[in-house]
Length: 182
Image (cartoon, rainbow, N blue to C red; front, side):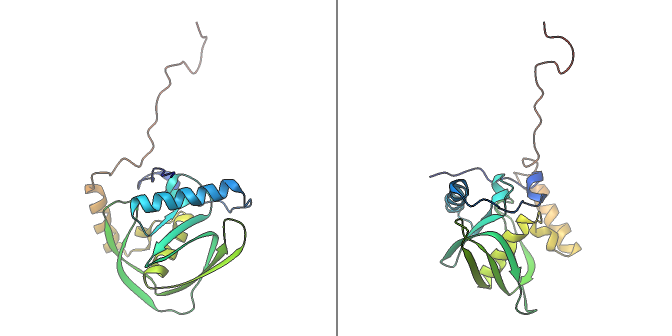
């Protein structure tokens, strides 16, 4: 089992668009397996590659007994119907905020072997597919909220015990950057 640390809100990788996958190889299959192992360990609904620090367009999901993964996902919306309800994120542990999403979605992409895949989602599965695809575009779900909800969410985030742990820490080298080495 390969459980990897999930990046926390504030880490720049979460707001950086992921690169398209161009090579479907053993390394990609290992990434998908690691994502599934981590998702199970964290008891989440979905996990995108950039949430574990890998800037590739791939994610896994497990919602209402439906599990799978998508590489290079593209979303289509068959109608305008919306849902408004609680949404959480493994990169913001323990916090849930009402977020408006589309009720129905058709997600198209590829398997980790390069085979075409299509997932049709409604309700919670649709919410998850949209959430994880947003991650791959460098969009956090709080970016989808109206101004009032975003202010309330940011207040809760600042009060969270993990807040500030997502920012990268810079360590100073004990070695001089310039000058002679003695």
